[in-house]
Amino acid sequence: MDKKIGLMLTLIIAGVIGRLSLSKFLPPSPDIFINLNGITQPLLMMDLFFLIATISMLSGFLLDRRGYSLLVPVSTMLITDLIIGNNLIFLFTWSGFAMLALLSYTLKSRGMFCMQRKFMIFGTGIAGVLLYDLWTNFGCWLLWYPHTIKGLILCYTLAIPFTLWHLLSMSLAITFVILPVVYIKEHEIEIKIPSFLSNLSEKILIH
Amino acid sequence: MSRRILLITVIGISIVAFSSIGILKLIDKGVIVFEYPESFPSNETINVSLIIDYGDGRIDRFNISLDSKNSTAYHVLLAAKNEYGLTFEAEYFPQYKSHYIYSINSTEEDPKANKFWQYYINGNYAPVGVDLQKVRDGDIIEWKLQEPKIEILEGKNG
Image (cartoon, rainbow over all chains, first blue to last red; front, top):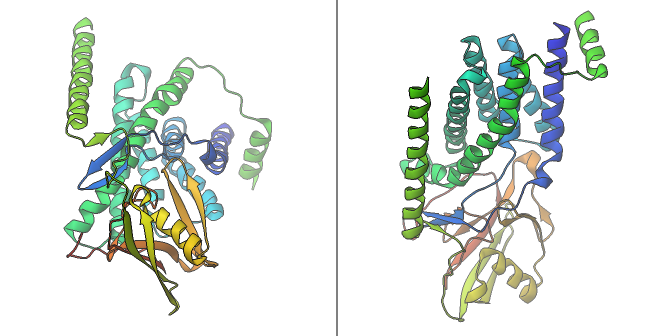
């Protein structure tokens, strides 16, 4: 039980530190442009979506309770948004990441989050990205764009470079982070939680 | 088991093949390009209007002339800086290939009041960053300090 809380705290801290420190290390967008509806944009617009999405999927996979799984992405976003700042779009981004955690948790509870079903994990991740982008861009349209078909088309057109980056970065994250974690868990390789996190989780349980 | 692997391999190769053909088609049709398209093939002077709306009733207007080779919304701000002493502060984001403007003439954005600098071309919300937005002769570039609310005119460029 306390180990799970330690794991939950580890995921939250990793997400918070990652989101606050990694934005400067994002690579510049390559010199490839996409021209849609007369609007020319870089083909890929890089952000740290993959980091919180990976944390969300791992929380669904590694934590035993649905509530804990949802708490990880929501807490990570809450803490970092308090520091970075946000606006009403948080309603959509927080719930979007919670959806990813829920998808991952559902996959695990059906016994399908395993190396034998790696294509299912991959497919769930990609479906999660598309679901997240459809949901959050709908939020952008609702909040900032004219509530017309033209506004909706403009909103989703401008989001395409972000979606392409999300698909690319998440494919890499699933391959190089999530699947190795699944492999490690299946082969029962012990991962040591830092002692200060174990102590912290014990204190939380006592209180 | 081997039939399953064969099926997965065939599906995988088909996806890669169809994706590659699709991407090549998009490159061929000019939807995907490898350098930002130039608006004007030759050097000529273009004239645009720049309006700064500070959101508190103050409005500044400038007539800007610039070289068509360097005619992005960012170049308009640079020209206004050189010609009229307009000041602005910006941060470049290489992952978006554009500057983010957060202060004009010492009037900074106010995230707590949800007010940010946004710009419009001929009354339409500019859909891309300042470094990617080309301007044409006669365009009106309007900067407004306002809540993020995108407006689209149903007329010119709308």
